[in-house]
Image 1 (cartoon, rainbow, N blue to C red):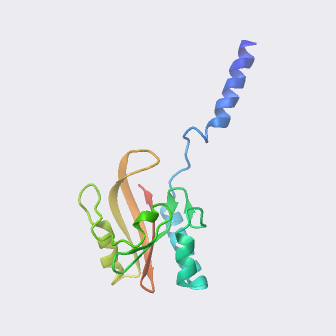
Image 2: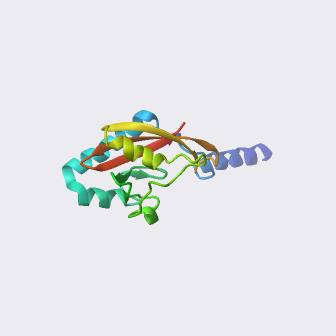
Image 3: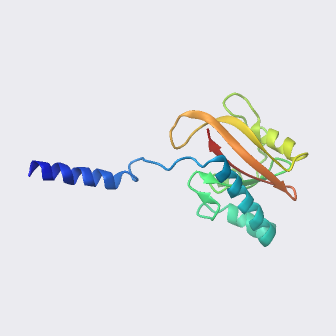
Length: 152
């Protein structure tokens, strides 16, 4: 009876693992590039209005929890953000990480002369609570900067 109870508890805890905090691994750099590429392809097929509407949806095809694609314009205005809708319409050029790095400005400045690239900054990982390097891949098309990231 005692062993049977322990076995039942072990099975119960194993079944709860996804619920009690065992999270999926952060996306790889290739996953991030693929997600941005898919968003750009969606834009090419569906146009600006439909794309921005989709990218603003928390339950959209480009938002999986904390893995998402957001969009800024070349002036640093956020046009789509599925996780933080309160920043849509705001200039984010002055947003800084915990070391004072203006990473949105860095992306916007680079996007004016390059088609895509990477930017790294410090941020608290919402999954672990630890301060980590976040790496952002961005690609610019028609004045729209599509970006997604992962933690290193």
